[in-house]
Image 1: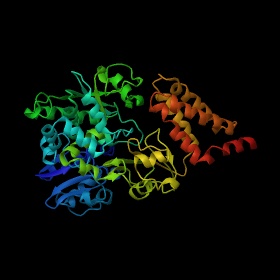
Image 2 (image 1 turned 180 degrees about the horizontal axis):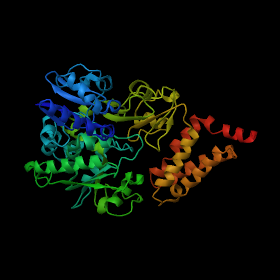
Image 3 (image 1 turned 90 degrees about the vertical axis):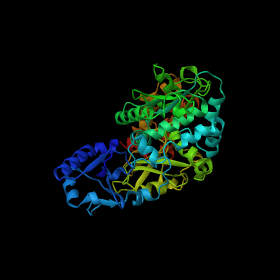
Image 4 (image 1 turned 90 degrees about the horizontal axis):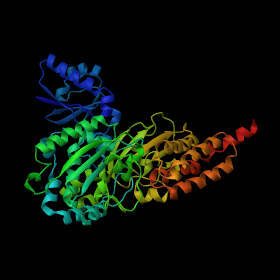
Length: 517
């Protein structure tokens, strides 16, 4: 029986993958062909979705992008044996978009059945957890610390330090919480893990539980990810049935279970303390810190909180060793980062690589420039509260410290590309409006400052007293930065001030136009 892989990643689904899978099954049945269709995750080459692959003696051969109307011609071309066809791209790993990647976190994504425990184990799964159980808490934390792994959710805080704090805090009940509330524009790596390699996240969270002494874990996911939720819940059930979750995991003496909770889509619930309040059944409102969640988190108990990508990196670290992971990257940014390339770009998708590539290489070479064919004018890195970088800063290495030195953020690794038709004053106004809509309302700088900021931007765009209003806007941004309780209000200055600094021509001509009327 020939195995044919058709992604069930939501991008592939949006482009007709279900229809393709159905058509392949119908055509194979009508022609007397024995075919098994595996619904895998995506390899992250979204510009080729739906990307179908067929298992042949020479390896897996890919075709894409495939529509249901292409299926008949694929069978006529003997695609089940890797036959020639205009949509044939050959072995996926040889494609230029994949060939130069360093896939540690996404090594299995798009390759395995995301809910098959056997498939997962056959491709190196559970080795990290087995090693973690063998070496124990102190050695686990030592390995994670030496690996240089930092929080991949945006803050970049050293993961080993966070885990050690929880482990050292005395309590009869501890929790592991995964922040899967992926709300940044242009980001989809967490979703790809949930839909394409759920068991890796389960393994990573269980490693953390062994390290800190937790018996219960929660994954907090956004309601916009129903496909990921279904896949993850199925993976949880199968992991429990196989003995990788629950009481006395594989006879180790460690007990740990995970529950998936769905949020209502509030952006502020991506902030860790607001997320905790939501998990507890309260309105998602930011808590004042201290105390830190590591000391008093969920239900006021010590809680290890990390992003999906942080937990997903730990199985590799434990199975291959801290040094193997730390060998990748530059400076204090060690390991790999799944970069999510989107917006007005030719080759949108996920590109995992070691830290250190320049922003220009990512946008122009890997992303292929704009989809419109017009010049790139700006790139926003780090979500809706990230700074806008012009091409003059494209020599910036993709590295936490390098971006910070240029008043930018790596954040969750999202990159959104804009061509030369973008109005950067409008983008600055949108940043304030976004903050206004998404604010939890607890602190005045964010709740009120965002409203006043939007009003200031509207006056500037109307050409009213532009220079004076720009001075007030800059001062307001600093007030929000230092006075807000969390990064929602505290980071809004990045898009606003970077747009003002690098694209002043989009702010000031309106004043001249107004004066001339």
